[in-house]
Image (tube, rainbow, N blue to C red):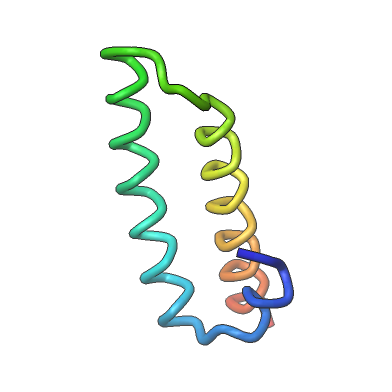
Length: 63
């Protein structure tokens, strides 16, 4: 998800997307622990996407 898409999304959409990303990240971590992923960079990309969304949600709470 690009930063511009994150800024345009509603707070409810962002929270839903964050929950989805968190669940898929957990699944990826478990799969990676069992047998190495073909592309382990996916883990980093998902973590960063989660951080971007969490940062935007925090910014909206402060305002």
